[in-house]
Image (cartoon, rainbow, N blue to C red; front, side, top):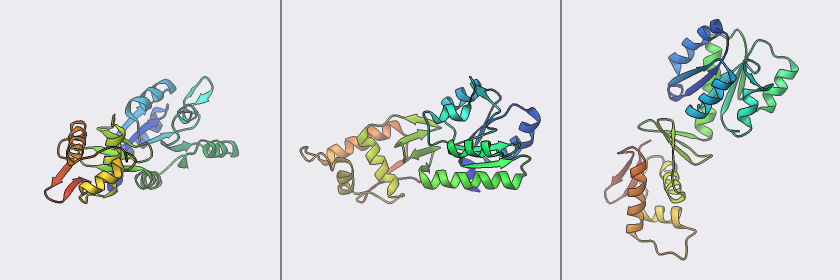
Length: 225
């Protein structure tokens, strides 16, 4: 269940008694849980916290007749949705499929089923595109975005390539030659020296937590997984 401990959840629900039923389960298993009881609040929280999973009743919160899920899907096709619904009609199931929900559960949901759904979705996130690193960092391999404390950090294209290489090596050291071919392979007309690699490493280290990238003397650089 360790994988659940890193999850950031946005829980969208209006009914206080329903929130009180499921909130303790979410809080006891996940890193952070945010509650939204209106459509506007849900959108604002989504934009601010960038949750890994959004749990919601499809028709609990609407803005101008559209569900929050529809609005978010207009510009984000990667965030995971779990539906908690009172009943599963054909129309609801079709909506769930069209909006690419990862899972749906019919209320009332017991703790075992909810944790099972969270674990299933979190494994897809982790194995599919999210890599969790030390110091509360993560890497989205799909968007090539690095996060620290859930905040995206701007990286140049070369810094992205370097970080991807280090993460793909899964904590094993990368030599200068490996870094050269991964980062500058397309720049055949440019002269790349060891100093170029040192400068790139130095600039990347300024943007990420201290100690995340280590220099193993005589071997190369590695990242703490």
